[in-house]
Image (cartoon, rainbow, N blue to C red; front, side, top):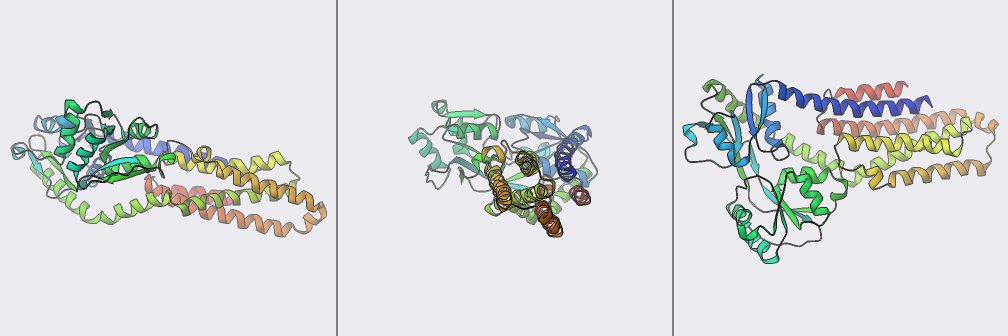
Length: 402
């Protein structure tokens, strides 16, 4: 029993530490003020925030996030309200008040996110706009966000189209509206939309995205009035270094995101849950436990481990409740094992003779479960990111000792 209590304690500790660590990291970035990065929305600008934070950390300067409406970012930069912005729109008079980064730090694509059963075919943004108008397509857009594509901007701003345009504060709100059939689709930055979809269990296999525009380069712009030229030069140099060495890491992160929602990862979680039930049956043999206690011993650790993973990954719904196949598998294994033991009529003397075999089986199941948790822990700690990463190893090591 102590073993399972320790399991629940460690899993709960991981959730709390991951949550507080991420909150503390975000708060630290806001408390240390040096550079003011103008952003329109954290859900839209999360990539820019991550890149700017990493570059600022390497240069040992602090970053302060200042929320500015998208259509006022350039004015905020020219007026000295912010020190840095990211934008794909380059005005003709930019040289009068700002420097551009030497190279784009990322490229921006717009995608239409729709339910998988919808078949829409278009080759560019012009055909997309014509298709929207012709079919009366209910289109969701991001509120106060300036879309860089001219055709899309005209569609959204035209008074004639306001009956088919629906504005949302975040991608999560637009995704919820799409799943509730309040809109037919929504258009947003591809990376931001995908991030919202993969965090929603119900949406992973139901939503597809269609790329509308080609890659649009996005640059950092630095304020000439508020930043010294030496600091701007160093920032531009760090951006060049960052872009050169982070291409592979972005690919790896994308593969990790795909892995966390893939079939093999899903199957791995089910196997771990089943292996959790076998030690419970072994405990029943040695302690003559009741069926209810065996079910509790099996379901609590197995179910809570999946809930903990979903919480750490900030999913909108927990897979254990929305898709209870984990619980069903555990119940079936427990019932089969329990009644099989009773039907075979195992006596206490026979159990004592097979004590070594049961101990070996217990250790093997435990080792397999911990191996699976190690894989899950490494992937999640890289994706969060979770600091320090070795926290997972220390907790798992303690688990083995218990």
